[in-house]
Amino acid sequence: MTILEGLSFALALFMMFLYLVLISKIYHGWDLTEEILKPRTLPKEKTAFTIIISCRNESSNLGACLDSLLNLDYEKDLLQIVVVDDHSTDGTGSIAKSYEGIFCITLTDSFGKKAAMTAGVSVASNPHLWFLDADCVLHKDQASLLDAQIQKIDPDFIACPIIIEAGKSILTRFQYLDNAAMMAITANGIYRNDYFLANGANMVIKKSSFDAVGGFAGNEELASGDDVFLIKKMNESGKKVAFLKSRRGAVITKAENDLNSFLIQRKRWATKTKSYANKALFKIQGFIFSVHLLIVVYFLSAPFLPINLMLGIFILFIKAVIDYLFLARMSDFFGNRTPLKAFIPAFFGYFFYIFYTGLHALFPKDYVWKDRKVS
Image 1: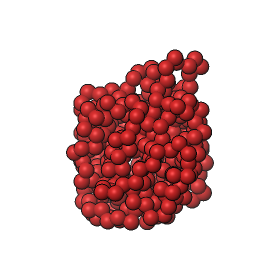
Image 2 (image 1 turned 180 degrees about the horizontal axis):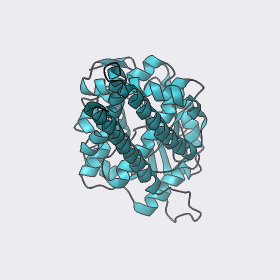
Image 3 (image 1 turned 120 degrees about the vertical axis):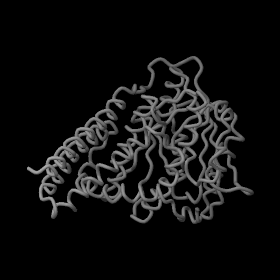
């Protein structure tokens, strides 16, 4: 074995060892995060929520979301439901107005999700704000689970889980698996106080804390990021942040069903990466990117250094085993192992995905979202 071959072999072993350590640490952080259960003994005074749903052209989804809210196993007088219509052209506002007891706002002088969420906050009458997306469906116990966590540790911000509704296609199953991994990454960061992620489709915030940090002020120029910028501000202001670890505390949201819509969504998410990620998160993202890049480099360099073909296959196999075991654990928690049937194509598709999102994170470009051009 030449010196170059020996170095290549050592690098492969070292990177796989570090990858195993990283994934193990992430899952360990998830495992150590306390699972929230519905209490057997009800508190004397339960939490009152203002539920804010900002929506644009969601006529096909809003009804199911509102129905699930009205079916929550929770006192109705403790739930104020506010729907903010962001210039919809498909009758979304009319659907909201057809429900009795739901407060409806139509944006006129402003537009965008942050503006819609802020408008909802302006009419909130309860001390806790619960932000949801219109394409989400809730378990009947979710309000009780949130109340249980608030009663126990009184957090200022609760990042709540999301479950992607996986269909039969490889694309939707890929999104389910990717999101399941992201839930572990989110919980790990919050548990270890290393980095802070959240999803605006399901998050709860004390109104007083929201006002104290200035709401969404400071990142209005970005179309996305209403969630991660806010949780970052909360942490930097010394507010208590928590993750709601609970399958029944997760909302179910629809996957993107075609590749173009999926890529536009992920491009939109990628544009905010440089603005919110801290060193700990950058290290995770950068290392995972490096592992995928190394595998590609090994295969491309195999004609010049034959041992790299074997090493590329070796790294690919070890990474696949680690990823499968990790995703199987997360799929078990969220109660759906079916998407693992698409693990192999999803595993290889992730190479394209990580290079695509990495490119757009470093070099953001214009895109169209909800019939609006975003720069």
